[in-house]
Length: 457
Image (cartoon, rainbow, N blue to C red; front, side, top):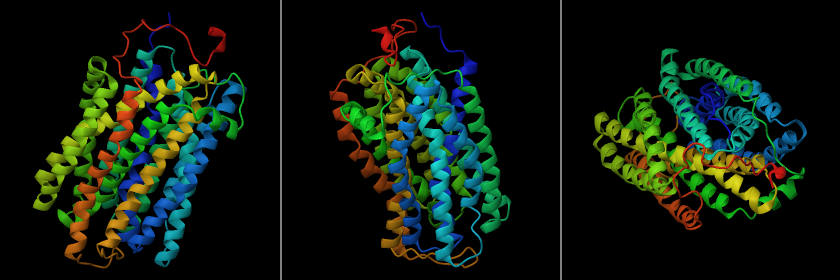
């Protein structure tokens, strides 16, 4: 019988999500605002800067996944790609917020190029990192424990990023200088978390195979995993909804509530409840089934997004912060539950196809997620452009028309609610497939077999 995972190993895996949480949250939260209200880039162009790099990511992430599987076949580990990304990302993240004094168009080019390189480095770490839970233990309850640790660490990273980064910008004087200091400081945090996790997961033995596949053959072999693609589509639409809300938050704080500094408070109210909600969602999933709880989280998140609209229209901070706390409770479920289901779809597919390839699946998953997280600011930028939002450099005072104020409120509430509703059909199809909608087995009741180990059969 395989013993439970010790806490040191769970922490060694989970700490990587402190870094991934920081990078996943901050570009969506601050980069669009940095472009439009610090560098003076027009909203439409700023949206393109954030979206177009992710087209590259959506293409390259599956290839990174295949490369990770091939590395694992050769070495039994996924460390090389993870370490490469961990070392490169801090410098590239700082460069994103270090645009030189140029015309707005050239500033946009600088940020766009830095963003492409930074997200590529991030995915060199993220893709093999997300593949590890399918290999961390042959016991399903232990894989679920690993995901709970990961989501707690992810919450801490997002909380630190969203709560502290805007405060660091203001402390350092705001504008270009404030963002430059913030980029350097957060880059150091990123590097420390990712390098620590790379070292802390070297013990995990990766066993993809039994044969090495090229990129085309690997994707062809993965094509029959309908459960995975249904889950990934639902998760991507939910990530898109969350990304829109993140991008809108600084604009709501600045133009509806009258204080940019409230961005940090809003973010803390969204993410803070996760520290309490993770064990609650985990317990509910064990009792009622993971997919049932996942559906409940999506429905509750949709209702909370709709409740935000009257709160924003009131232009009072207390109602907005209160409802964002409710959003945070639901958001935890949208993180923990699909990530708990992902390794199960990967492992079950190995029995169908005879080919374990966790990296290939997580490459596709990460490509969809990162694309959604970048498309969110692009969608919100389109709302700003359509509602006549006025961009200006930070030194120039500007008054927004009523149409732009309406667009900010609707983009923060109604658009995410619509995207969450759109995620329900693939999730319901996933449920009908009867994948993972059963209580997690108690410790020790699942056979110690690994789909990636063909000798077990």
